[in-house]
Length: 360
Ligand SMILES: NC(=O)c1ccc[n+]([C@@H]2O[C@H](COP(=O)([O-])OP(=O)(O)OC[C@H]3O[C@@H](n4cnc5c(N)ncnc54)[C@H](O)[C@@H]3O)[C@@H](O)[C@H]2O)c1
Ligand SMILES: [Zn+2]
Ligand SMILES: [Zn+2]
Image 1 (tube, rainbow, N blue to C red):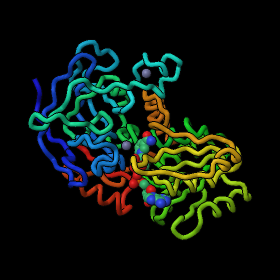
Image 2: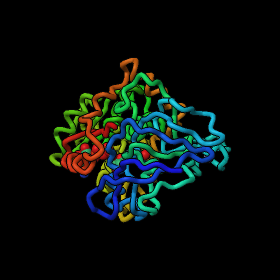
Image 3: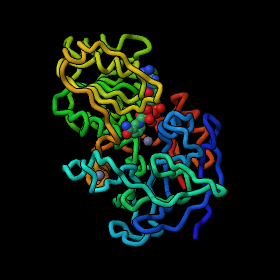
């Protein structure tokens, strides 16, 4: 059996998204059917629509979501019907060489639903294995992380991608410490979450870099101590000036461009860390003098999903939010209907929003 639900798809490269009726199968072994309550519009959805991730069209977009478990398949024990869950796009397998070495947060074989959702018989590619701009979606049960149901769905869902990626880029990947100096390049949902992460870790200097003054103003609300508009001044020089001529301990790239990666690379202090959390497209390249890579020491890291472990980190972020120590409400610029995704992409491109969140 399957059921028909409304959902947002990207049919071909660059074409506006469409709201259509798709077929969602009943959950099979290890799967869960989720009644979606809210799903944030992340820049990665736009990357999918533009064909910048891969060309497996049609995509079922949306991946930053919360909802209620409607049904579970055979053998599912971690979640039950009626649970409030945040969806995650890295359900660890527990069996690959990375999991077996005790590093499940970088699992090399993460789970997705085995069955496919379809549009008129054509298999859909769900964004990041989720596809949650939909009234209901089918996931692997490990992709559903149970959390306290007392948090509003549009706020909880943000933890499923941008907020977790950004906070984790600072806390987990960048390992920001008390007293550190941190620069964050790109102050969208992910970058502002990285700023929050740096604040939570106790960084003393947090420099927000963007090309948009409005974004820089918002970044202050999440904990930036200084701002730099890199369309007006050289951010590398500005960051040196703010750090006694040294550069920052941790530089976080949250745009996904070669130019901002290079700025992050050269804004670091000796032995500092660069974290790439922005997602580049397959054509992008960087060229760096190898002597600089060597001579500056430190580490160049990528942050998959903020190196998070959903079962550990999602409930922890919900706790911090409920205690008033994490500003999640500040990320929700607007709530929209399922037919508002295309317009939300335009607002994102214009820099008018941090997060538009589809509420169902
Ligand atoms: N690594 C992960 O797990 C992960 C998870 C979620 C999103 N992402 C990626 O993170 C990036 C940011 O996502 P988002 O949802 O915050 O996007 P967003 O569009 O909300 O924010 C991007 C920000 O970058 C700024 N910007 C653009 N060009 C710039 C430049 N040259 N210099 C400085 N700032 C510039 C924009 O003004 C905007 O504020 C995207 O590439 C997205 O795909 C990665
Ligand atoms: Zn694994
Ligand atoms: Zn995302």
